[in-house]
Length: 186
Ligand SMILES: [Zn+2]
Image (cartoon, rainbow, N blue to C red; front, side, top):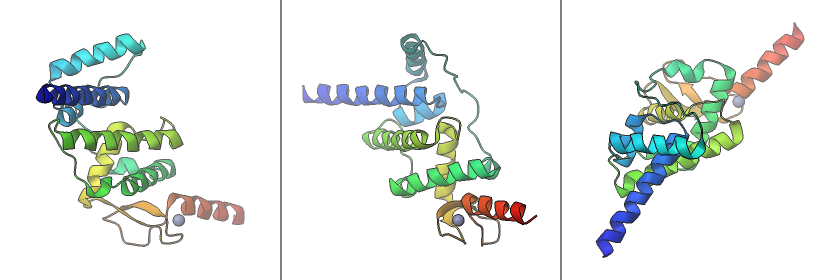
């Protein structure tokens, strides 16, 4: 009886996480990796989600994002990337590698990631960085090869730093201020 309960509750947890990820337009392969659900079950969940919410949800089947430049392309994305990096750090995700295969550890990791992303959305709205890009950013920050978490040379705020550039980078807020000063002086 216990084993059945345990199985049932894990299955429930898997479905809840998959629904949450569908809502954020996560890719099928990401949902499969984190929840351990089959493609067929994920497909059915998509249909159930659309039927329930009457929403058009985009299903992303292609490759995951792989562009470091995406996070540094303008002041707004840099500000969003810095906010996400701050949340990753605060909630302990920067040092916790993603788990796979729908185990308890994988499900709780996935839930923590969703909570972090939802906190980001609550502050910055849905126009910022997508769920998959947020996951890719975390991967990059953990790897520290192209991007790394660091501090602004001017105000010490946490920011995302291009690891291949010389040190002394300043955060988007300080850069915006500096630009304003230059514009005023000119
Ligand atoms: Zn700064």
